[in-house]
Length: 253
Image 1 (tube, rainbow, N blue to C red):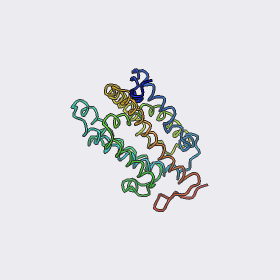
Image 2: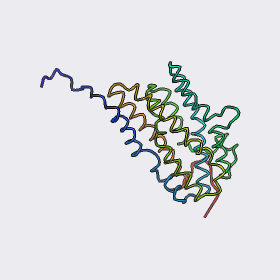
Image 3: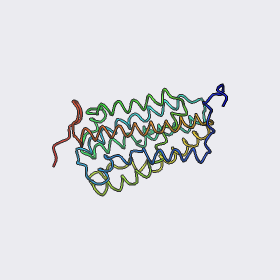
Image 4: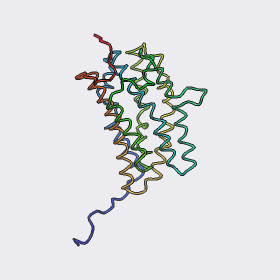
């Protein structure tokens, strides 16, 4: 072999089917549907206090989704992309007449027995929640636009989890039933959003290097979601050590 020939030969691009299959393989391995916290939730083994901690910390994530999406929208020079992507912001912020996802999540917080003011003040949020959520905002701001869009593709897997979650929450925690409107809306919103984002990523990832970056972006997003649940599990389940300043659930049997 000629030593002057570079060994860093660009791999050939994946076919469209292979590229898309890669996203689904990442979701099956890394999406947070397999996290022990969610498994306990779906088995009806969480206390009210643990569900309160989940709803409160998840609200912080929900509240930053429009900020994340505004950052992605602002970086695009394509009017058609901006027109399609701004729907996500309306879905979460509302349009002034119909409540958006953030308002619906506040109602879920209230259904757990906490006040919406507690969530709006971001009081009692775990430090790891703040770091993980900010890491996501930073990711879509500083990485390439392709990677930012690809990081949203966890929505490819969310509908299945939402259907399961709604069924199990109604079964095991009937007192939460009045606060599940957020999930009902996402049953249609998430597939629409993921279809658009996937088509965009497929259209703009031309090289194997770009395809690999898109796959890595989805892994990073899965890691961020998993880290948030790791923090909840450590603070409120095992060993059950909420840090100073974090929400302290009431003592329960």
